[in-house]
Length: 207
Image (cartoon, rainbow, N blue to C red):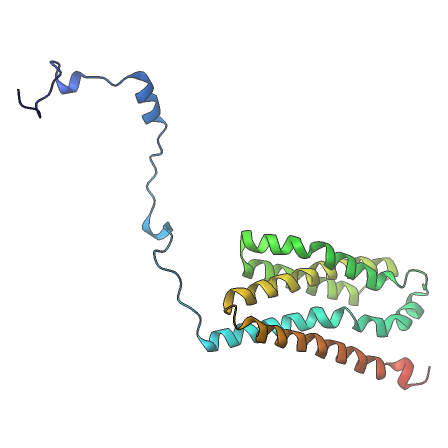
């Protein structure tokens, strides 16, 4: 008998599979994956210097907002206390921001790995802008403290996501140079806060 000849005496269309094999085959997925949904075979092309420069400048401006907002409010605290006639809760204007930003920093870092850098940087900037608008229109000290907490949620998300994006777009050898750029942003924020304190109305007008 030829070794390729069928060994079963029954016709092929009458043979049945065992129940356990048939059950396993019934659970196999029947979906067809499109080629557009498949992961790329080659890694993405590296960014050119112009694209890296654009990303870094935009991130530096974003970081400047967070760096400036941590210190510049201190210059307006006496005016805020007189406006709302509340001095006992005045320290919470700064503390609420610092507590919120510190609490959400690791959360935004994890969420950026799950949902992407762009989504989280837009989310943190949106929270920061909404909190800033609410601070500007706050009718009482309580609302101002709550708005500062919301602003801190956005500011706390800006810093870790910006650092993560920098580590993605530049090589490890160049990260030291870019960290120096961002350190200069913090220095500029502190200098702007001191300049604002030197020219605040309570100092310049002698009140």
